[in-house]
Length: 161
Image (cartoon, rainbow, N blue to C red; front, side):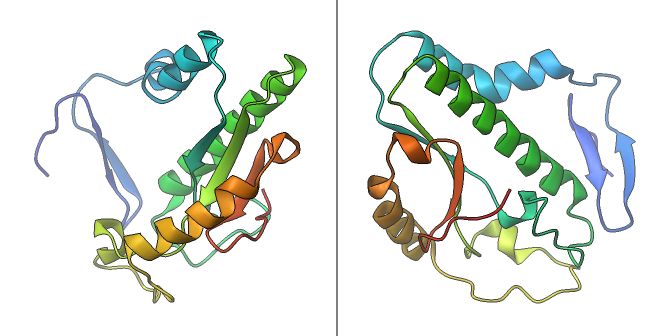
């Protein structure tokens, strides 16, 4: 396996994990990379309508997908994202912000990720990115502050955490 600077190489086919370097990102690195940009925007006090995070059905604890071999790290990252945005929504509600925080499952979209070789399950209902975005753009405007901190599909169905 080739070396990637500062990255952890995950070989999900057989669930073996190897470090590509001695550097291991910590919580601070993750927070700065994934939450920092949004936190900076919110700290400005500028009124923001809606912040939408791209989640996945793989990140739902209630609808565990036990057939997704090799997707443990991906599912964990989406579950962490879901918890982070729920906390963000609760914090903003306590501060009486009208900002709406949503998680969206975009569906099974024909992207590079959907073309994974070696998976043992069939990805059903694959749609184009345009179809996914069109669906999400129909759902998002209908959400109000009372929906903040909730999880939705591109079809407008609330998804379980």
